[in-house]
Every structure is written in structure tokens, then in C-alpha cells.
Image 1 (cartoon, helix red, strand yellow):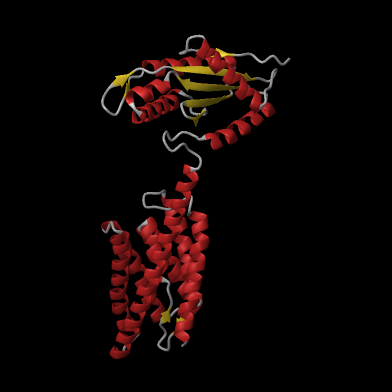
Image 2 (image 1 turned 90 degrees about the horizontal axis):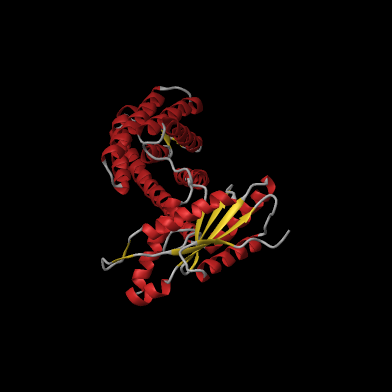
Length: 366
């Protein structure tokens, strides 16, 4: 069966191209409301896909061409709206003329493409459910093709047979395409979710230890290369065990969340805030000399001290933090281990000397 072979080839081309296009567009997903040039580019890409499908189409005896060129129009409309769908239709119409030469049937086919693009854009605009969109687009296209075939296929019986076969094949291909695209998008969303969850702390949303390790190594290396100062704050909640013992672990978790919000709010946009475990946090301060690092640390300490921590049961408590400071400079560069060790020493000194303060232990290296 020649038509089945052509349909299978069209489907294989469609699937292959969708996988490649997904790899390109997955992190820059096209959507309605994007700048118009993006919609036009997406429409051009879909139009070229439609031309490729037409290249492997089945030429019927009465001049009609059988392929899956409507699928790219549906895709363009679904993701980028009617402008992209219209661009796709124009590219396909031009491709139809170039590949099969001009004829009255070609004119009808081009008109069917343009009307389908406009109708698909309208459907996408007014139908919010994606699955219903595809169903309506296939249904409306079947009506448009039926009207267009009145001129292309004069024989009524043959026309009904062709339209029926076309509609069934297009419906099957559209369902397959919708499910495939839906699967690709969902799979990428799950990948991004897993990737992000591996990089952030599940409770606070801050960077976790793995991300912290990568960040401090990278930033300290840049600090050495550019001869810039890099400061590091190690932060610990004072008497956090008492909060857990007195108010319960849910209250302790709420304190951790609110503290994380305060650290993110007070820190600079280029600073890297992390939860290093338990009630211990850290802030990496790139391009930050010692004097300014003290100001940032004091600003953080003061903001936390002033913040009313509201617990799940409605109680409000005060919380303080102790901060250890370490600085790597051009004159006295430190390794990651030395930087973390000195910040730890500063933190312990802050704990020993009364808590709720910022302390620094200078390196003894020359």
C-alpha cells in the first residue's frame, strides 16, 4: 500500500524533527505573547518542516497531494498563536508551488492552508484546554478540506472517500503528535525539577552543600585570577536546639525558612546564600573587601535580630545569629579549606564571646 508507506515516512520525519526541535527549544520554549520575531522564526521553522513532509507526500491521480503538512500549522498555532501559524501556512503554500508547480489544485491547496492557519489561531485563542484545541483544529481542518475538495475532486463518491481517509489519518497523526509533544514537555519539566532539587535545599530553597561547594571553588578561583577580594560568612542560629525543644520541630523549620528569606533579602544580588546543614548557613561575598564584608555581616545580623519570627501556632519569638567572617585578598590569598576553616573559627569565637555578633580570626600565614 503506497499511501501507507508515504504516511509512515511522513510520521517518521515528523517524530525525528520533533525530537531535534525539542532539544533546541526546550530551554527557550516558544509561547504566545513572546516577541513577534520569535513567533515568526518559529513559524518559519514549522513551515520548513511542512515542506519536508510535502517532499515525501503521495501525489494522487486527480492532482491532490496527501501528507501531514497540517501538523506543523497546528503546532505553530498551539505554541505561538495565529501569526506563527500564518507564517507556516505561507511557507508551505510557497513550497507547494515550487515542488509541484502551479495549478488550480495548487491554488486551492494554498487557500486551504491559509484558512486552516487562521482558524487554528482562532481556536487556540478561545479554547484554553490544549487537548480540546487539537481536537477542534482537526475537526475544523476536515471541514475546510471538504469544502476545498469540491473543486479538486469533482466525483462526489471519490471526494467523500478521500476526505474520510484524510481525516482519519490526520486525526491519528495529530493524536500521536499531541501525545509525543506532551510527553517531551513533561519529561523536560521533570528533568528540570529533579535537576533543581539536586541543587537546592528542600526546606529553605537556598543552595545546598553540593551547590555551595561548586560555587565557592569557582568564585575563589576567579578571585585569584582577577586579584579581587572574596569574603565568606559562616552563620549559625543561636540556641536553635532550645527553639526545637520548646516549640517543636515544625516551629524550628519555620524559623529556618524565615531566616533564609532574611538572608536572601539582605544579601546582594551577586552573593551566594546557602544552607550548609542543620541551622548553619553561609554567604559567599564576591568582590567584597574586609571593610564592606563587616558591613554586610552586621546588616544581616541586625536584620535577623529585628525580625519577628512567627511560628505555626501564631506565637512570635526573637532569634539571633552568630557570624564568622573570613576574607581572601590579593595580598593574602586563601584556599577553600583555609577560608572555611577561618570562618568556622570566627563563628566559634562569636559563640564563646556572647553570641549575636560578628567575629573574624585572622590567618597566621604570612
